[in-house]
Every structure is written in structure tokens, then in C-alpha cells.
Amino acid sequence: MIGLFFKNKKNLIYSILFLSFMVQSSNMSKHNIPSAIFNYPDNFLSALPIPIPKNENEYFELVNKADAGDPEANWMLAVIQDTVGHHQEASERYHLSISRNDKYKLESMVNLGFILEKENKLAEARSLFEQAGENGYFEGYSAIGTNYFNGTGVKQNFNKAKEYYKKASQIGCNECTYFINNWNDVVKLKKSGK
Image (cartoon, rainbow, N blue to C red; front, side, top):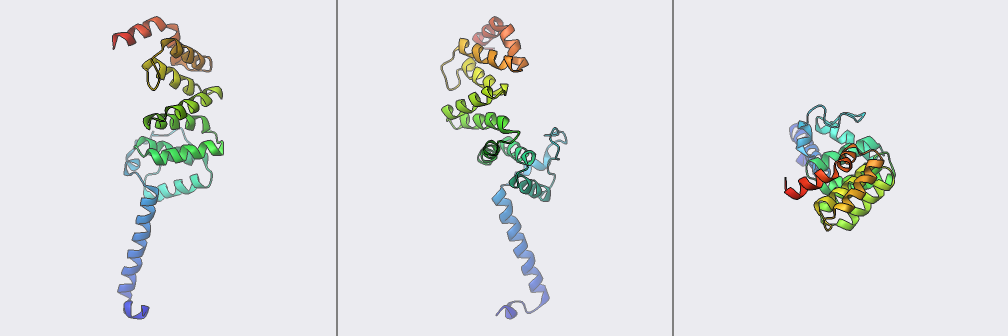
């Protein structure tokens, strides 16, 4: 039967090419490759020891590294997906970082918290921010302070905002230190709507 279909080498070659195209297409949709990743400037995520992928093969290599447990690859994929608005894929990568307890765990908690805020899952977001802050990552406390300052997901409360900015300042947030040192002016500016 197969011999009838592949009477000549040309049909066989076309069939193989077609099948390989279908497999590649299914892999691309499975991994939801954001085409925008191939257009980032060279310095995007340049602090990582691995380069950003510039083509599909490099992207698949990155996915394989991340799936094999490479924290830098997983973090890069999470940030790329988050940046292009693929929040579900980014969330999965952030969760993976947290569950693996890798070196990007605290950053992943905060970034996942921001995604959860967009999904109106405010209690979950707050919990992640709080945990990140308690573990020494000031961005967690800073996020909570900003929520109180702006009234995002909570009733606006400048005293609570200052309390969280102070916590963040104590563990290294220079911007928060500036806010605390100039608190009256910061609040006055906020109240003026500027």
C-alpha cells in the first residue's frame, strides 16, 4: 500500500518535507513562540549568562534548557513571555522557578504577583509580595507600598504605604528611601494628581 503512494522518490521527499513541517508547526504552537523575541535589542536580558534566542532553533534550545532545570533559561523564558503579554506561559515559568526554589524564586514571586493583580487575584498577589519582602527582596514590600499609595486593590492609605516603603528601604530600596525622606512632598504631589 505504501509502495503505491510513494511510486517515486519525489513523492517520498515531498511527504517527508510536509511531515517535518507539520511537526515543526506543532512544536511552535505548543511552545507559543512569540515572534517578537527575535527582534529585541542585543542588551535585552543581557545580565543573564546566556544569550537571548535569535531564531527558532535557539528558542527551542532555550526551552529544552529550561525544562531540564536551567534557572537562567527558565527565567529568560518567563520574562520574554511576560514582556510580550503571554501571561499564562510566564506564570507557568514563574511557578516553576518558585517550586524549584532556584535563584530567581523571589523575582518570580514578585513578577507572578503582578500578573495575579492583573487577573484580580489580589490576595494571592499580596501573599507573594509579602513572602518576597520577608525573604529580603525589597521589590515585594515596595509593591505593597505602591498598592497602598495608589489604592490599588486596597483602600488608599498613606500611612500603610509609608510603612511598607520603610520596610523596603531597610533592605535596600533606594527609591523607597527617597520617598521616606521626602514623604510630605511625595504625598502632596500624589494628592495634587500630578
